[in-house]
Length: 127
Ligand code: HEM
Image (cartoon, rainbow, N blue to C red; front, top):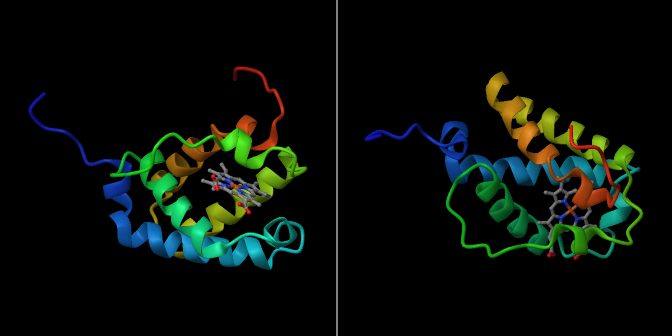
């Protein structure tokens, strides 16, 4: 193939969109009384930066990030599927808020949702 279609990262607007997305998304997460407390001791500047890199990589954009052990980073924190769903709901609301197209919203959510077992430490089925 001589032509490649734009990556999801490019389709949603590249680095600039990712930066706005991550900032507004974590504003929502921190404001949520059920999720905010998880981040009480977290350096949010560092986390936002890592999440920008993570999202860029997950959406096939450029990244300088090496392999991240998400399971290790999240283990022992008591994060359940319920928290995960809430987190993803805030992501969806933010994608809508910043004007990402419906199809692209769904594709971002689909990709991020594949990490659920790493984040919650729960063993799911293959579906
Ligand atoms: C697919 C969803 C998620 C992704 C992709 C993700 C990604 C990340 C990344 C890349 C880091 C930085 C890792 C590191 O420092 O090595 C991180 C840290 C963290 N995540 Fe997540 N995360 C997700 C879901 C969640 C959820 C649902 C919660 C809690 C409700 C959560 C709580 C945290 C906390 C508290 C830290 C910071 C740890 C610290 O203080 O250093 N994450 N996450």
